[in-house]
Image (cartoon, rainbow, N blue to C red; front, side):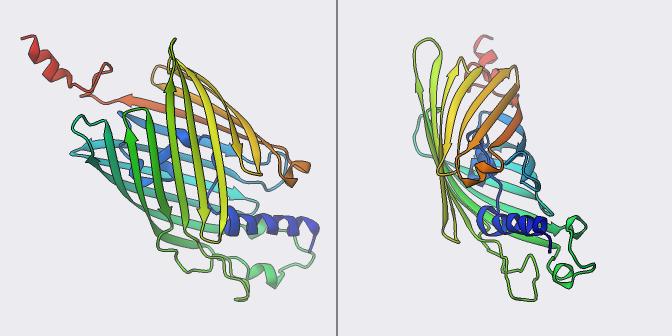
Length: 314
């Protein structure tokens, strides 16, 4: 087979055995994408649209898109959903996930909260063999090496918050770890979905002059014993503009910037690769747009419903 086919096959292997679930350098702006317990954790309704192009310039490199939203629906319940698509060379994973959370009050003043979350995901894994070029037409090794699969699974999570100062979470994706071969290859190779464990935490430091330093870290462990750790430092002014830096262990360093205008927040992340792949494709780019809809019964000045507040002055 041609050299290009070998390279593409390597990307397929990386996706299925290593990464499996897409990367994000702006993970701190959408915790619900990897932790169902974060659904409903905001005092607004976020609608998050994300696009990431990884290893730009490398033919067949991962490209991902996602749209998600979640909200507190009352009585401590949070609900949300996420649609996503990621393509790597000839392989593609598309899916939808639904999440439900419940908030436990840990203090009378409601500053401390713990959410327990459950999610259900439905994924479709496909390989487009028309994008593969072989030396022999109708190569049986290729004709039998793909298997379009629809795979259901479940997610679990815990998410702790302290006011708007700190947060910490732990979650597990692909809990059922469906034992299904996603790419047939004469039964010599089995590509199954492994469990993914996420550990995230962050703290916001406030300074005079409306400045805040937002710190966050994310650990991602795949049950195949692949561990990835990353962190970010973001300086924010008046909750409107931010500039930051990030580091993904042995993979990349990056810069982040963003702007919030009314209910719309824009964000961009640039990653410069520091692994060996930088010799072929040095950069990755990620952008997002988030709409932050204010809840009807919540004042922008606090958590007191306007109806009750008006009654005080009657």
